[in-house]
Image (tube, rainbow, N blue to C red; front, side, top):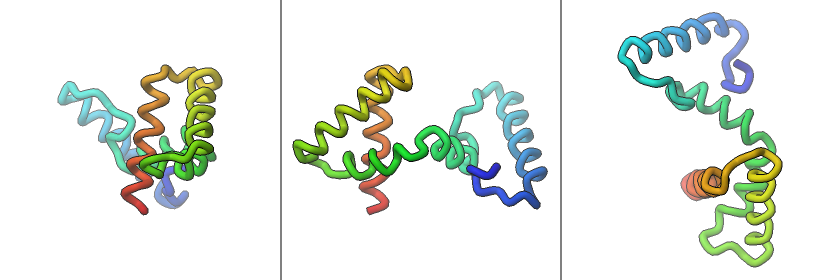
Amino acid sequence: ERAAGVPAEVAKTFRSEILALVGALAAEGEAVKWNSDPRMAKAIESIIMGDRVRVIRSTVSAIAPSEEDAETIRKVKECLTQGESYCEKCASWVLDYYAEKSRRSA
């Protein structure tokens, strides 16, 4: 709730809304995706990525990264694959995702 930016006063309502969303999706035979609710997506992104977002944003936001940034990107991918058990494809996807997100917010 904190990561989603939900104030304590409305936490119970937030939980009820998420439960209703999960129930509605289940009734329709749909899977609950990590981004089914925008507030949950925000929370999940902030928890999973944490401090990595700053590193990723600073290195992958350039369309043509410098040699130094390319090396940082390689190290981040290595950290994601070896330290966090991401597959190569997923590590690249995360970096590409945040690169695109950084370009849009710039």
